[in-house]
Length: 320
Length: 320
Image: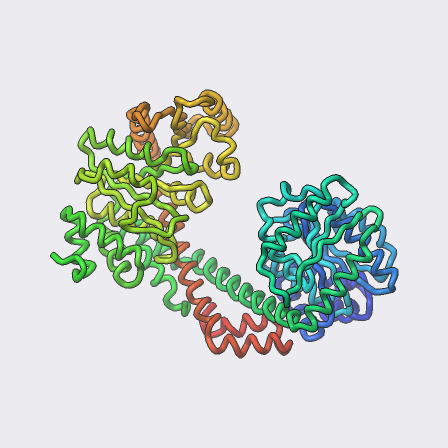
């Protein structure tokens, strides 16, 4: 099959039968936005809902990629298939591009049970916060059971994206306090599991105490999930089986308590809200660049009409 | 005249004849938003355009209020009338409230040539970024020739508000680098005049060198205004006459070069753009809380319709 000339539906069908090239191409179309992306979204949506997503986030240099790679290795030793979405909002590269750390992921390049994809484009599909759930649903729809979503950086956007997973793993290092000071609260809020990676380094005990203390001070009730604080060494794989056990335990916990369904519903509602808001923004942009706009604006600049009345006039006739 | 029972037009007319109580009340109505605010805006707009605004911004503790107070004293010594808008986005207080530093302004409480007003409310009229230009136009329309706009804090909002003045004064202190690191670029962008206040303290020379160096590195051409770097001691008034001379020099420069008109046009366009965007947001909020929303949302949660198609459905019929 020639991927370039295939329709979105043909690509989606081929991806669903396990064609990795078709899946990569379908993701590219999705990222590019427009009508093809919409069609893929429509095809994927009813078939999605079976996959479980694990978000992995933390400061640059925390060793997320190494840890993700070690986690993949552990999962694969149990013959479970896995897909990885690596999100880097600060990078201009996307798609096939190898993003620095991604090199480490090449360990799994020949394993057909692992599908790895980097996403870094902004602008299409209304930015990464809208492109990420679409990509997850596509991976989900073509049969991936586990999807790891790794985000690079600890800015608001990265934390938000990682926090949209079913289980969120926050990776810190000994002495974490300094590097993520600005967004500690944001990380605390989304963490289901804390991992002190590079735990063979100095300061791991203090970091553990620090985290446990913060958890003690938070208002968790006895029925709530208390994020465990784990130790790993990504480079050797030490602690990774225990990390995966905790992911499975958290999955069972939120599944049993109904929290998983609530989270997913909440996320969908938020996504809808965001799509509607984006559409209205587009609409505003269209209004503000039209010819009528120039005429009305002239009236404001000439002090014939005040800005608020001008806005009323602009919006009249577009139903807003 | 009973201010409480007066109509917006009566209040505006009274304020225009110099009634300070009426002016204060008119500003309160403006802040409160709604139809009365709109009417005041419509009344004020055609009569505005004569005042000149000077923005004063800088980190908390830089001595902005003391410097503003000293500047008022200097202006008043030349019998020029002046109005001051003190904007504090982080404060829940507004109107007559005395905002910490505002106490210093009480020096001028008995001087009818000085009108001082604090604004701190958010939410009304679409937030301070929209309320501030409205308040400025009102002060302008009732005959104030000079309006000082002092903002507390150096966050994005504060810098934006201060940067909307005709001339913007950025107040720093010896050793400024550390305190405003995060927003240095933002401050550099809006500064027409730099003032090193508390210049009798250690480190003033280094700060001056630092600032001049940053200006050397910026891409100013020989036709551009190069922000002068001045030294003041707000508490003694030292350097304040020179500061005011630079304000007058900058005013003449941008007036002669056509830059003043361009700035004002740009600001008005931006304001219009913001009002239109806010209106559409309001519209979105109305959509997102309606009954139809619940039905469509249910379809998404049940995987009958994908989020993008649901958004299309939501927006159909509202012209967006």
